[in-house]
Each structure stands twice: as structure tokens, then as C-alpha cells.
Image 1 (cartoon, rainbow, N blue to C red):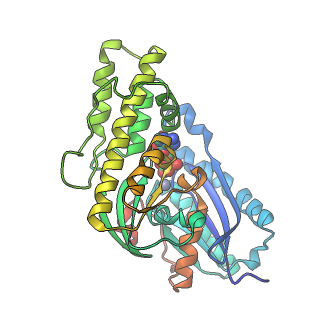
Image 2 (tube, rainbow, N blue to C red; image 1 turned 90 degrees about the vertical axis):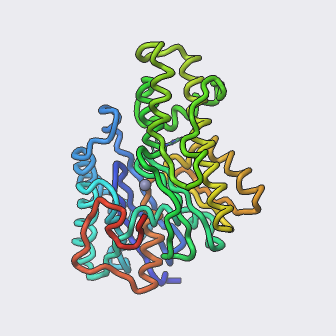
Amino acid sequence: MKPEHLVLAIETSCDDTSVAILEDGQQLRSHLIAAQDIHKLYGGIVPELASRAHLELLPPMVAQALAEAQVQPHDLTAIAVTHAPGLVGSLVVGVAFAKAYAAALKIPVIGVNHIEAHLHSATLEHGERPYPAVALIVSGGHTELVLIRAFGEYEWLGATLDDAAGEAYDKVAKRLGLGFPGGPVIDRLAASGRADAFAFPRPMLDKPGLDFSFSGLKTAVAHALAPHGEAPYPAGLTADIAASFQAAVVDTLAGKCGRALDRTGAKALDLGGGVACNRALRERLVSVCASRGVALRIPSPRLCADNAGMIALVGARRLAMGQVSGADLDAAASLEASGLLTR
Ligand code: KG4
Ligand code: ZN
């Protein structure tokens, strides 16, 4: 049977280039994600290099996504593209490509907010959620706790006041001489360390709100390492720091999630962002949700990190609601640019 609609989605907000084709708002016909390894050489993301890489990767990836999905360009119904927030130079590449391609095919383009897409990425695998729901988005650039009353109806519960959770992982990993990105390696090393070796702070957990702060934790790690000089450190010390740091992050994130669920009476907790790949966080949230009878919805690692699948999902929903963008669609760095999400 011929699909009702096929949405091509493009995600270029940071350092991953991703293209997806979604059939009828639920079936991913193809989904490609290219991580840009070049940034590893520099110990962090270099915006100029990210933009150039998106420019090189996008045309062949779109061609491959169409081929894998066995879709011809003229079969496409609309093009969804991340337009905010993110690195503006990277977003511009995706937005310009999407607008030109959509104009050539005479189909609508739909600008999608990247954080809104993270809020819904679990839906691709878990199906529709019960409402209201709470979502925790934890990545290299974001730590956001959001109440979702319905699709498109969001209330900000909390956010980081300084570093994002993933940024804290990356900075601590750098201090430990472990390279970039730091999350996966700290996650792995933490398993062999002692979580009680260092009493790191649980930032803001003793305060009533739902905001976060991770820069003090990074400083506490630096203080603990000061007597030992610079990296490389003995393996046992590295593992103990990793385990103690991770315990502090997980306690903080899980503590605030529990508080947000209690305060809102939410029926589901959705997770998104690269830090949602963290094994200790996933395990802890299982008990946070089970004890409250709340559905825990964690996407597979591929859908936690930046991906075009989630952009396609939100694009298809907006298309169904008749909410397509005009010719003035533009890239914007800030979360608030779409007017949809305000902290
Ligand atoms: O969502 P993402 O792929 O990109 C953006 O930042 O938008 O997230 C990347 C972040 C990095 O900070 C990385 O260190 C962190 O997610 N990360 C992890 C894990 N895997 C990736 N943090 C903790 N544990 C992990 N297993
Ligand atoms: Zn992201």
C-alpha cells in the first residue's frame, strides 16, 4: 500500500550529521547518522569544522537514505529540518539544504526545534505515551527537565544554571586525560572504581527547586586531583574519581527526576540526549519510576544521541497539524527561537 506521507528529515545542529525518512509518522524507512570524528583531534567540537563536514556529508547521505528507503525524491511529502537551537553555522547548512531541496520538489519544509525532538524520541520505539509526562534531556549542551502536558504543550521545570551534565563528563574526562567525548569512558571506568572513595557534592539536591548546577562538581574533582599533579594518574585513582563523580551526577539527576514526578503526578518519564546512554543513570531511573508506578521510556543509544529520526517524528506531527514553515525559516542558536519553548 502506498504510504500517506513520507518525511525526509535533516539534523545538523551540532557535530553529528543525520538523515532519516519516516513513513506515516511512525515507520523509519532509513536512518543514517555520521559522527564527525575530526573533533576528537581537538579535544572538543570545533564549530567551523562541523559546518564544513555537514556540507560535505549531507548530499551523499540524502542520496543514500533515499536509496535505502527505496524512495524517489518526488515521492517525498515534506522535509523536516532542525532549525534551533545549536551551533548556528551547522544549523544554517541543514536549513539551507532543506529549503533548496524542498523548493526544487515543490513540497513544504518544516523547521523543528531540536529539544522538542529529544522530548519525543522515545516515541519512535515505545509508541505514544501517557500524559502528562516528564522528560529529562541530558546532553553535552543541555540539561533540561520538562513537563509535557500534550504534544506541543510544554512547561519548563528546570535546567542547568551553568554546565550541562554531558559537559561536566567531558571536562572531568579531559582533566583525567581520557580524551573526548568523556561520558562513555567515565561510564565504563566507573564500574571498576569505588563510588564512595571521594565525597563529591550533589549540587542543588539539598535545595527545593528543579534546577541543576554541575560546575561546582567539576571544581571538586579538580581539588581532589590537585595533590596528584597532572594526568596520567594511576588506574585505581582514575577509576575511583570516575565512580565517585558518576555517583554524584546520577544521584543529582535521579533525585530531581523523582522530585519532578512527585510534583507533577506525571505518568511517564522520557529520557533523551547522549548522557541518557549512561548505564548507571538508566539503572537508577528504573527504580525511581518503578517505586512510583511511572512508565520509564528510554530510547536505544542511537536515538538518545542527536539523530534525524526524532526530527522526522516531530516534523510529521506538525505536518499532520498543518504547521509547516514559511520561506522565512531561519537557523537560530537559541532554544527560545521557535517561540515554542521558553524556560
Ligand atoms: O546528545 P549528544 O550526542 O550530543 C549533544 O551534546 O547534543 O550528547 C553528547 C554528550 C557528551 O557530553 C558525552 O560525553 C555524553 O553525551 N555521553 C555520556 C555517555 N555517552 C555519551 N555521558 C555519560 N555516560 C555515557 N554513557
Ligand atoms: Zn541533542
